[in-house]
Image 1: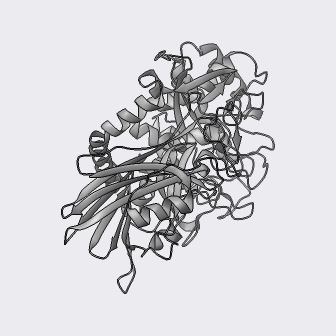
Image 2: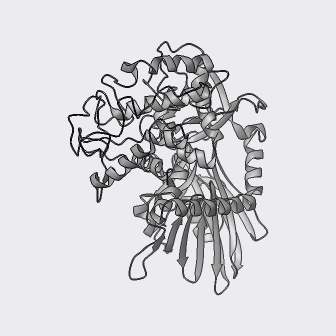
Image 3: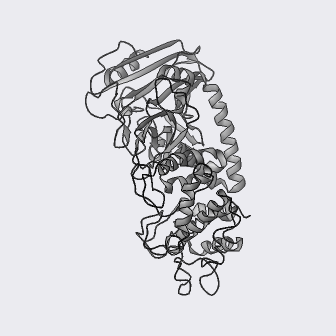
Length: 550
């Protein structure tokens, strides 16, 4: 918990760099900078890449801004408590719900207002279009097609429910003066907003009002020149039916969120600590906010047997189903939803199986979101498991490729997953990856024995005379020192899958070594032979490999 003095807000479990608000898929990804959490009324939420989105507004001189009491995030919800006078409000955002819970000691009359503008559609120009029907494309990572859904419903606790569209200043002034949003204005103006207002009357007990924000797109992604649609459209084929169900399902979703949060909390504490739990709570929302589950498109999509999951590389250039992205999220999906790993790999192997890629190693990604049209760029080795059967000939090709020493054990100058150090030769971590991949492939193909024994083939637990750690290069094991290392996170899948490519003593040795080279503040450096780069998520992968042995 972060708690400031003099009655200032407190934050649970800590004050993050950014709070997830509505984080549902690559195009509904609204965040609030942590630096603005203590002064919520004038704060401006942001799209994940940094564009300002229209949100709360507390700059009107005639409005007394509320005071923030607390902020909290979990793996499923973000909660802010604010107070004004003797009334208290709780803003609760599980997934893409915005719930405002109001209470008052003296039965004060309360009105609740919420609004959005065209920035939520990815359009910041003047006279932005209300309905965007352009085919799949992006500008600055924001979708230029589909519809933004903003909805609310009059509950029994609301005595007056109104809505309007019009110029921002006029709409807000109308609410401030009369407590409602009515008399629609010109929606085509550059500063037009859409607003809802709930009049709750005199409130004594806690009363909740729910709003819904979402991005509805019939076509989610183009895969091999065929459009694919979000999975939910098999059940809810239009925005109205989808939002009706979403509102109706609030109580069930709220309960499920609580159950999930508790299970994840307990799991994080049992395997790590409170700090690990705090990181994991944000990580879950980041991961699921980057993926979309799809089926083939159509007027009435119903092919539930052809399910594919696509993940957008939000950290850099928007690549689709990048191998280097799927691997780091493997631990999360292994625990929460193992089937997602197969669904993420399925688009890749289907594309590879067409024969378009002429190299004898897998491709790096499927293209740039939202066009998974593929290309023939490839990465030299990766971990393939659980894909035998239909793809046996494809996997055999990769076995043959990695079995050549210059493609696996002694790889020429090559980029790694962390590419900041630039291309490097004979990277031990890549050699470990190749060795583990070979044994994973052997398991998939039902070979009688392992294809590679890391303990006897040049990658064993030796570097200096004290046998303290793996060398950073497969060729310098007799010419290294206490700082000649790289983070060997590719040991993790070997332990996870129980392949036994490397002896447990090698994993334990490397784990013990990390404590001697980890910076007190920054963490574990990726490699000693390039400028310091901290790969925190990969350091966790390396640590998890050791944890699985304990």
